[in-house]
Image 1 (spheres, rainbow, N blue to C red):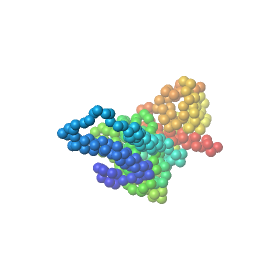
Image 2 (image 1 turned 90 degrees about the vertical axis):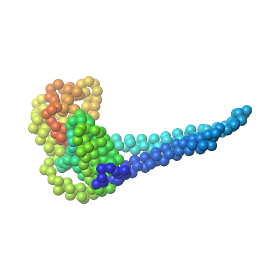
Image 3 (image 1 turned 180 degrees about the horizontal axis):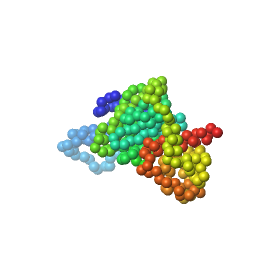
Image 4 (image 1 turned 120 degrees about the vertical axis):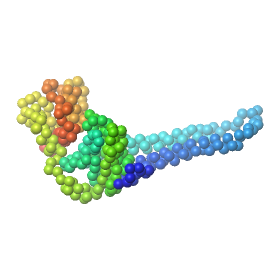
Length: 314
């Protein structure tokens, strides 16, 4: 892992190389458009600093095409650069379907990562190269910001909300990760390691790290422990929505709106059940705010997502 101060951090993904290329192109374009202006200012200041008599009897000849070109050419070049950068940025919000999903919780002052097969890490993140990875992130306290310089990626992590960041590392190595948002007295110590491995090494690491249960299995235990199955289980007598096949479906609400049952909707339904009430159901869902930790909520979300997968196989 490189030192804390890096003038040009190493690149661990094709996205990082594209970002560097955009930055270099913008720097070159800025220099090409601005340098002639400053050079001519200096040249004219030197040449005409004593003044010079000018014949103003006749208007100066104008070259319309020259005047148009020095407005149109810079506009076209900067607009093309804008399109390029916008396409690159928008790709951050379109993760592919076959991602490896890792849950992330930021808290003062550490990063907690949990893999779908149950392995947990603190201030370290192991990922395989050549496979898209999606981080579902939230915060337990204040605003944090996960920054991985080698990927050229940074994303704010907010309390009470899930945010997504996805990437595909392609260069094995150990790189730095940090919090890029001032989050308290020990903010500067909220750092860690991003470890990109070959698929074989990553599989070996998963085996060595060990885990008895996946996130979904742990979520199922919590589902029963906190009595969720009493209302949402298949044998429940209470009039409550069935969770089988819920994830990814559109849900009509009492207010007349229709929302997508994604990670955020499920989280809010657990912690803020009165905010979005499903149409046709009574207001009897209790809140689990200040009862469940963000880690536990992520496990419950993973379990409910697994119910949708099982329903699809039937």
